[in-house]
Length: 295
Picture 1 (spheres, rainbow, N blue to C red):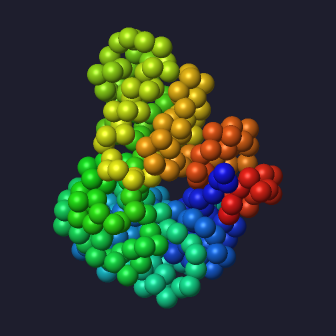
Picture 2 (cartoon, rainbow, N blue to C red):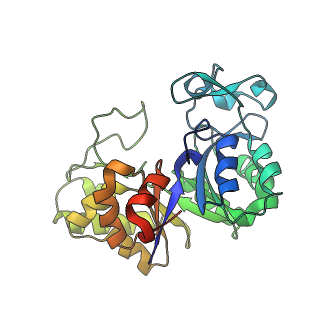
Picture 3 (cartoon, rainbow, N blue to C red):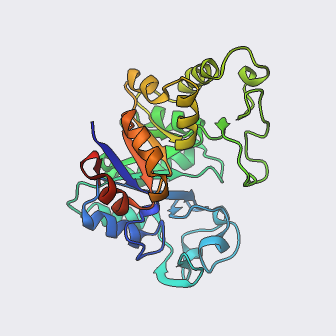
């Protein structure tokens, strides 16, 4: 089996602002297999290609993204990684679709939907309407399992992905954004508010197996799984092969986000037959691992 790299935030060569339409166009034009960009709902039914909820972080704008309309974004530009303002205007989903539908390319696009605004049925219906011309070329992923389930019921043929980080995650020295769950460290040392973490009732491997089983039922059948690479490693070291668990249920698995300094873990996950690895350094990793990796 060969593992495929997903270009995180459409970062291929570092020539364009991460997550922008220009960066995605660079990836699509190069014919990469998979590219990921983030989506945030706007107030008028369109979506903007941004990761953070505040415009200041990645653009020359100010204010909450979800309160803006497409017209409000006029004159706003992405920041480069050094903080300077780029010449690339903030991009919307409608612009992405308008460009992609005319491209003859094998590239598949993962759209990671952020839940900063309530992901109501009207919002999700608007998303599906925008994507209809390129539906076969996209996958919608989200940490919001409720939105993933609603999308499945609204359009069973759409490709979907789920990241359970709001339900189970590793402790980190970096503080979580205020109010973002899980808020409690459970008995097994994980950020986990599920009753299975209230007390130690078995070994770590049994705990991971039980949590994986419970989480599995939060997403529709056929959903792709996007899992923290270090969470996968911790489960594996405890004796539970989460990748194999999902493969037995006909689900594909992507580990995020691994770069060149993490080659040891990348090799370890390739040995576990992980389907995808999300990375900011696809070209560098391909040079190191050769035929084991597909760009």
